[in-house]
Image 1 (cartoon, rainbow, N blue to C red):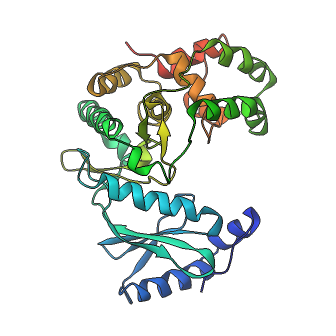
Image 2 (cartoon, one colour; image 1 turned 90 degrees about the horizontal axis):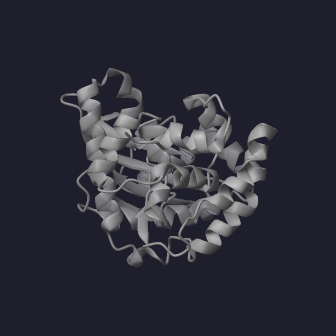
Length: 307
């Protein structure tokens, strides 16, 4: 029911077209014993994701992204019951037609933290970031070796070299002004990042958008979206923390780091921001603002500084 996808253009055309996606999702649900259960597509995410009634979530991966589906299923199975915040339970994984892959998982309760944040009091925000710090500490303490066959990079130092080589062009493509672009090479050269860090299982997109909360008391009820998981330096996960959880608030980042048990250098976190696979500095600048002096060291302190 779903067509083969080979290029980015084909992917975009298919994934965004519900007249194509929904019949395929309904057919797959029928094969999985969930015929007739209401499907509701979630509006966010790089892959098509559907709530299947109140109990399940179905995530679909076109052929070029099938390896991400395999990885997510493996990571979720590895994590089951091992974090202080719930993660989805894997109900089924497999291949569908024309190279598509799927993960059927349990649906977690709660509201999306990003959409709820404005309603959360300061005291509850402080407790939530404490819970996030504790969850990250537990995630990073787990042995990632059982996942090494599906998660990369194999060599962290080679990964850093590759990301450095393309860092300026990636930001140029996003429209970063020349005054910032010209600072990137010297800034990255000035920040010592470990080439062989202690290997940690990384979520890589630790954002409010990927946490669920119970509005009755504001406690975490879920962490999801492990599709882009990696194995590498734990500091890499604090890019998302600083940009999308604490959002330049030094008091909240201090509290989160205290719960985690470690504080990362702001310069290292901005370096990892520039090297991140999905880095988009102009977007972050629009969201968080920039210091008056227009320098990367000041930007590091503004976004990732602690008290």
